[in-house]
Image 1: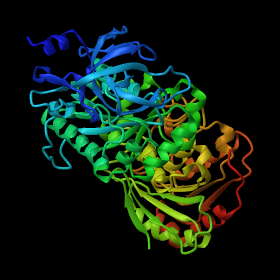
Image 2: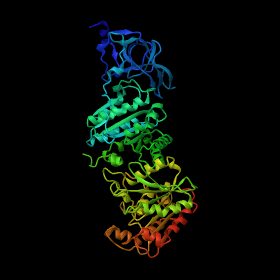
Image 3: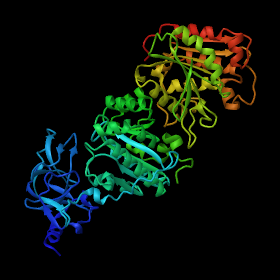
Image 4: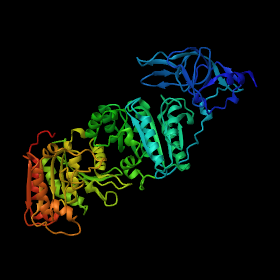
Length: 350
Length: 254
């Protein structure tokens, strides 16, 4: 085994790099300026916000100064953590535990500065071409399907980060899959990490994919047309794998640029049959319900962290006339099926 | 000209008057099981024009909404009240400010008063004409005849103050006494509500009035008509009464 391969074997390999074939790495190059998705070897300089890294198998390994990490260059948009751009020098930051190397440009007041790393070099093949996540996309290319074909498709979107979107999506997956259907779940936007995908699988999804399967480390500042095409690829995959439902989760809130643009895309809206909202407050829930309705998107229910408060649930139900559902209600197949109506199953739960 | 709108779930006729004077009001007319939405549309356009308000006439088709009047949920089908709410949100995203004048004839009146029980704060006024039977605001009777055993999937029912604060006009033909297969009958319902639509309208109105102050509640017997929307329109002053009832200034609902 070559020295470089030995070195990579010793390094902590992050989750977002899981599809990469590292045997193609023949050398490290300076790599600057890095492109989004470029694989890099980096060394931990100083532990700050992130003290652990998510490995390929999902285990969150502790970090120590001097640890070598296999990461991916990328951006991050996380309202309760960091805004980060691509690294512009060898001194950079670990800006997501899934394994994103970036350059912190903003942070939430309640988080520490990002963990500091030094980029040793970009992984490249024998010709000096950097290895990039795009070369290892596992998602099949788009095979068009007719607009009437494919699984019933439910969008999960929310008022913002930590409004309960992933919990809502997982509850949907769990209830539906217990009722019999095969459910595929996907995360269309965000920053690459494993926990949401693991959660979808734990909830009963027969398959769970995200943008990292399409070769993206994160989706911030990515062309919206490509994100919409990615959604079409997810739906085509779900169709060809004979899933009955596709759950699509969008990260962040409606005012995040890609989330907003994706939802406003007519091509994207053609893919979805209905929507569930995760909300953390009454004004946010109402504003989002109004925005989605204005775009002609039908809303089957509202859930999220606000459902911890019965008073907030009453406020939102009263203002919108839509069902506001707790996690327990979402987890009841009979209740969920009731609110899914024509998008639900005609038979009672097994 | 009215336009037909539909969102894949529910279709409806929408008429916008030449002069829109109150953007926060919407007159909704709900058909009976004959699904005569267009007939209702034509009948109510003059009222919408005269009052300068929008008119919406939903079509709850037999195939998609077989039990719309009871807010029934059949597995695999959408609930009528939620379908209407989704359509309203799409038509008027700022629905939180909207006030509905809700009219229903026959099955439409059944739908309307049950909708009002679920969403009382949305209703500016309610006109119930010739309902076959009613949900009484009676905690001793089981749903749909009363409030006991209220379905947990429906919004909590209005309390009596909320219900009684809705200006309500109950109408029925003085000859609406035919008991046929379209009228739900049985020992329990006949005993509770009466045998005919005429009796049932009186009994529901008086039951509600017995619960408290109903200053804005009215009852109108339509002279010499049976169970017919078109006869009520052409041979009685039903539309004039409705026009007069809903044009009254209404204070803020509860």
